[in-house]
Image (tube, rainbow over all chains, first blue to last red; front, side, top):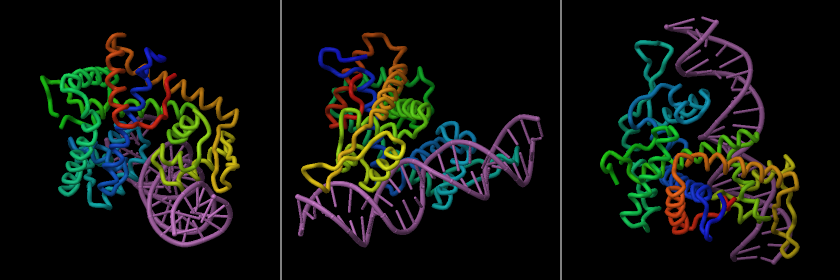
Length: 149
Length: 149
DNA sequence: TATTGTTATACTCTATAACTATA
DNA sequence: TATAGTTATAGAGTATAACAATA
């Protein structure tokens, strides 16, 4: 770590860009009238229904927190609970048709904002950056919240 | 955007790596017994004292939120308020000696966790990645929260 | 009048512990 | 006994609106 010829170290650069991505995400959420957490939650559900426990694992939250989050989204007509036919203890949470529409629009808006952050790079630089970041992601078992657009 | 030869698009890669950085940050905060927000707040104050309004701008928070955050940190002996001699409305918030110690340790721990994310890259790749991310950060007026270690 | 902060209020986000019901 | 979720509780994070004090 440390400076190299007057340029930022990798750690600093990673932290700053993460801050920018978070801000883009938060701005997109505000645009849609919900919190970043609810936005992230909708994105987690986009690929398909999920159990309460799985949601907690993917998002890194305690199970009671997940209960509250699902309650909120359900109250707003974005998701619905369904009892697992194979295990009556388990619950499956899925987007409602309205929730899917909102989630897709939110995802598109958030993606556009994030893409805009790298607008000043050349096509070749973007490809290089995507490759290196992809390696970092792959090597650290990142949860699949954002899928490819 | 979209897939290119089976690899992730830049937007997705950015989002995933941001998620990893956030998780590293959250883990470091938990290690120190406070929330990611309090950790970020301490890092904002590391370079020097700051006014309430400036803190809100840098962190993207409403002023009443900043009041609450400073109250919390003050209650825990991490920061103290000082009235600006030039403008008695204004308040300057600074780390206490204890707060500085905690902030520095937290910053070091967080930085180490973030650096570890890129451990699998070669030295040359890390330099390339740092350069490209630095460009992205510079071109988007990112707030200076993480300074170089 | 405009600006700096704080208060009052109302939610959401979060975790821990205790609980219910099913496996 | 172990697992899937919920409830109870408590506190932190957040914003809006109304306010006080100073410029």
